[in-house]
Length: 607
Ligand code: G6P
Image (cartoon, rainbow, N blue to C red):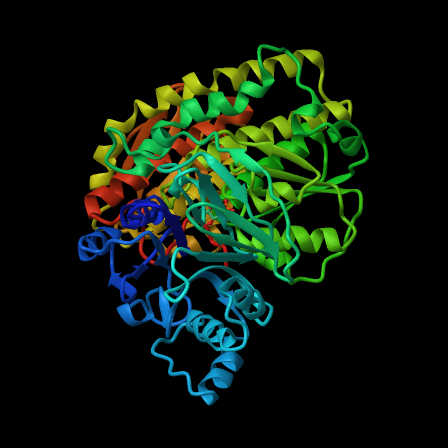
């Protein structure tokens, strides 16, 4: 998704803008650009491709005020003409989001004589602000007035070379925060872009607009009413977003999972019991009245929800449904005010998940819980209860450590729900907590299988399709494995519950179709073995992720990799790790852009 960085300081800010954009690269983008207030007007540099190219192209640019942007194409193909900033006369604008009424604005402004040079919705903002400046010369007020005409979701930053030293930023729906310091003031789509200059962050609310100069920050609502927003000292570690010794963020994040899980589970401490309060002070009362759970999420986060459904129904006995947020938000559903709405999101800003949460609430379902990796995010702010996964910043587009920490959080929710419903004995509780606590060690042992997985990966590189099979709580893990493979290696992959094999996908199986199967030693293993025989009989090549004690022999066309420990209910958390490693290594063999797969974005803040 698009990323914004803006700066007004008493020094050259071009390196800050470029460094900030580099930190936002993980969000996904196809072009980049910056505009600064130079001596004789707006100086703009844009390039298609990586921020490194923009950095080279802007090496001679110097200024104390400027805005910068990474663009993820929505309106108009990726090309320099469509890259931000967009300029109209004296002003330049960068924008994240979608302006829904851009066509009518474009017609109106074209009729007034403004000439559009791009296909973007953003350019209409640039001309609209320029047109407004004719009657309202103060930039802050002109942007306030212009924003009131915009329909849709946006975060914008605007500069005017006739009013140097000033940046105006505004948000309505898309993320934007300020970084404040004695030597300058800044804005960006997320805090990681600004840690290079300050830890003091001010989170703008929807409908806020701010004027930044090197010395001062002034925040008002879009109607001009002044507001104060608190300064938060970001706890984000700058090192957490550095690559260190790793080749890719995805690789780093896969290997950070033991630590991410340990951090996330720290909340349980050394105790043998678990308290509802870990989800918020109100959790005990609220959960006691809950008679069902509805999980809303997108992408990988939805797979953690689909997995948790098996836990919540089996261990806690609570009916649970999982819905893809973009479907739920537009479907006519039957609301249940006693249902707990669980919104799962790594970023906490995914537009569809946020909209689905709001939709659920608008139907009178106010018992809400956010499971999220970003404490200050919109989804967390809008839920009654919260659990913050402590995975640390996740940069790779393909989600890994966010997923396993979500699973840990959802297992804790299962235990709390079971306890509140009187379905968990003290002994069971202590056993589960012990298993949870051992997870970081167990995951570490699975990571040691990397070399074997690397060898398997070589055999996938020339394949065009792959089938992932799982049963029960490992079916969503098969879904996650298939998603990982297609996201970063571009091999078409599908997941099926193994029992469905005969109902269609078996027709596809031949020697060119690798079939990856998750085969833990559980009550479904025997059934799964019969499914695997069906594949073998059709000449299919099987890659089986089994447990140490799953009795599946290696044979011609059947490759077995055994996970060191058999992990019972929590086995999905271990079994997803080799699938993450497999896609990572297949992508390496294929030479794809692992951290920034084509067409995908890390944080999908538009519909
Ligand atoms: C994008 C990302 C995925 C992520 C999904 C949901 O598609 O590429 O990795 O799973 O959004 O994001 P969220 O931040 O809500 O978990």
